[in-house]
Image (tube, rainbow, N blue to C red):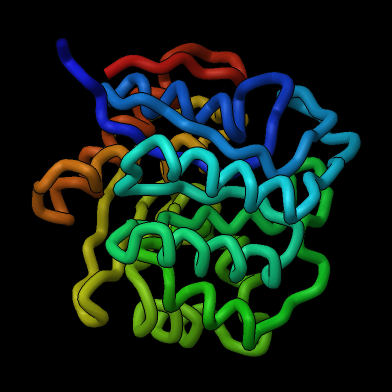
Length: 250
């Protein structure tokens, strides 16, 4: 019997399944893994409009995580929206307590495309502690600018890369649009150009990238190859159709 390895997503529920928990699980399954999920929020949205977000109580989030770890071996976790940096810190500290070798991939969603702020208040001291527990962080250019607003983007990249690996998504770049940059081992920069000449915008593409990265990190392959695999998968997802909701295949 072929027993699939497990990956955990800790994220919000998107009724359209373009982003959040269900999008992550579809990505995990496409990579051959079994997706587990912990719900942090119930959102009221579709692929073009974001109307509301109801946060799940911290105790419920913690209990969901503990219950899953009682049953499953989880080597990698992807984290999406969580109500605050303080709650996020408790979550990552718990994950490390439950599995000291777990790889945490954080997709720091600060604002929905429709304008909803998930982290209106920044706690930079707590955010720094969160980064130290992560194996990767996957912001886009708008998000990385919002993480440490008192720094310019070069200073922010250097600051984050000194604490964790950074996959910087290039879809919002003003210069080389679509070029991703990966910073790891503190000093190595990997530039990944777009694969296709034309790509179609997709709701939840950031969630797909971070969950694809989580999937690739389970394999014992060089980090550069893992990141290039992620880029190829995401662009295949973007070009799966011309609508805002993509389909998954490997």
